[in-house]
Image (cartoon, rainbow, N blue to C red; front, side):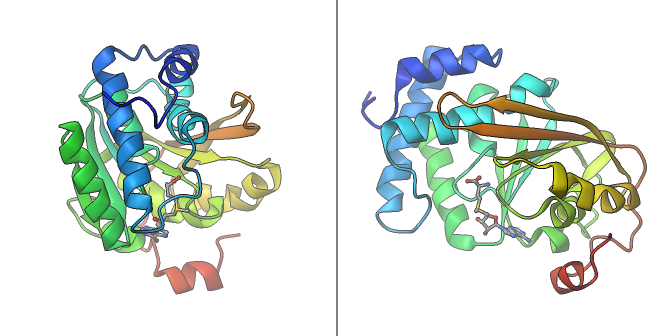
Length: 241
Ligand code: SAM
């Protein structure tokens, strides 16, 4: 096992701090994931973070921080919207291979990378090449998930319109943000209510020495009107504010 692409012990400690006990199989998988990220990044632009400590803290641990705040039951259905190189989705799956995970992105080549990574990890997940606002109109995805996650995809108001329609009533949307979010949350409150969501908690924490992070938890309290999500141009032009 080549551990030179990430910091194995550091990840174990950081994950334990989030209540996640990574076993040797999971740590081996993170080692493979880190190597694949660096290799693929030479061919296509996936991430600006490629140093071992950056991958460990800013990608892997940051993704696993979700478990601090979300109690995700066995076999839960999770969709990671705008997954890119697999964050947080693939990291969550390594820690919890029982999850029924869908990895959605509008960029086909990123999903090609994800499929190669999943195959190297020996893990199963559905990859879905679509724009979120289109996939959420399809019956097989609409209100079918216990959880939706998204990190670094869009402003919270737009993101809520992309993500809340995937979540079943009683399920949750977890939005992962790096910067301070008060204004962004204020600007999204009306949209969240219109889409059937409710903010349950805004959890701020420090991620090792990588700065502040915020995990926003929303609960789906009523069905989303079939009017939503709208096409992305409309979402941008007519904000739900
Ligand atoms: N979540 C990953 C992370 O945190 O590293 C990737 C973040 S990257 C900045 C944003 C990703 O969202 C890109 O891969 C992009 O293709 C995808 N994306 C943006 N808008 C989208 C949409 N409307 N539907 C599906 N994917 C979208």
